[in-house]
Each structure stands twice: as structure tokens, then as C-alpha cells.
Image 1 (tube, rainbow, N blue to C red):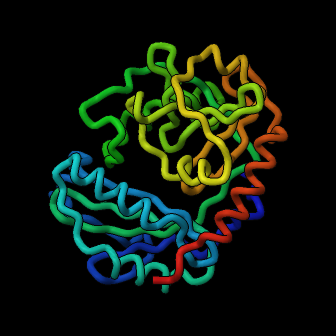
Image 2 (image 1 turned 90 degrees about the vertical axis):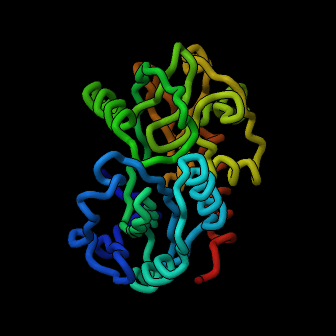
Length: 268
């Protein structure tokens, strides 16, 4: 994939393990931990720009909300964050924190790179469960959907449940309909409440609602949002093609990049 100017690879991925920062390839978890054996764990991911996080408090709050829903105790996270950012230096990347039911905490910082735009394939599958909207490590359904999309020669999957648009396995979808930005509503649908969508709504009007596959044909533009993919244009969903970026997406991407640069978290 071609790197964007904002996603040049930094150093090799590093991990925090029991108070030590080690190369990610050397990080381990106990084999008997239920987080490893059964995916009984929660996590969250945060954008890192020039060695500083963005919206860290929002992501930590969501991590704790996920942990509460799972009945998992969250240990003190600060030292892992401090140690990882100090070792990472002034590079771009993504910080991920994982907490398992067994009390294991692991942190990971790695470089990220995305192409200028991506394609999606709709994947029909039931999306409501007892843990809908909780960011757990149980990602088998998400990975299955991603494999279906890649077998159809798309970059990522768009989950559809009975014709209703949900989310990507690791991101939110936004459509531009009649010039307005519209996204699936987590208050009505069994999807994750996106921190990045909420941040975008702070700089522009974002309408939340229930979107269907028919809206894909009506949309003028489409883009994806996640912590590490702020306003990533979509050039195709199935057979439907979109400008990438279209004028609305291009304008929002520029404004959101300015917002990120202006609101980076202070170093811990």
C-alpha cells in the first residue's frame, strides 16, 4: 500500500510487558490466560502523532466502559502509556492497550500506513449480540467478514444486517447524502460508539441515523473513520464507485487533520 504523508512508518513495533518495553515480536502472554484462550479481554486503540496521543481520555473512558460491560477490572494504565511513548519517540503510529480477564495488561505501539483510498465490500451477517458495542478481543466474526471482503478483492468489509448498514470490523462508515455527512447511529444500532465520529461531529454537522444498502447508491461520497484512519476516502463499495476524495470528504479531511494537530494530548 502507498503511504500517505501522515502515515510514514516509524520504528519497529514495541510492546509493554510487566513493566518492560520490548520489541513487539518478543512480547508474550500467559498461555493459560482467558484473554488468549477465549478472547475474554477488552482493548482500545489511540492515534499517535509525533509521539503524542490524540483523544486519549475518550479512548480510555471507552475502554473502561467496555471492561465494565464485561466485568473486567482495569488496572492502572498510566505507566504503560508513559513508558511506551517515551520509547517510541517523536513518531507517528497507533497505541493499543489490552486488558484480559486474568488481569494481564499489554500495550503495543506500532507504525500505521494506509493507501490514499480504500474499497469496501458489503458482508451480510447478524450483528446484534449480548456484547454489541463493546470493544472486545473476540474478533473472530470481524476477521471472518474481512476475509469475505478480501476474497471479493476489496480492502475492507462493510457489515450489513438485514439490509441495514452497520460498521466496518475496525471503523465507522460515513456517507455524504445531499451534501450532508450521515453515519449509522450507535444509540439505535448494535455498533461501537466511535470516538473519532464524535470528534468529527465537533467540527462539522454529522447526522446519525439508520442507513440501508439503498443509501449506497444515493450517496455522493463515502469515507471511513477510526482512530488511525481519520477521514479515509472510499473509492468503491461493491460495484458502486465514488470520487476519492470527493469535495466534502477532501474538505473534512483537511479540517480534521488541523483539529488533530491542534488538540494532541500533552505528554504524560
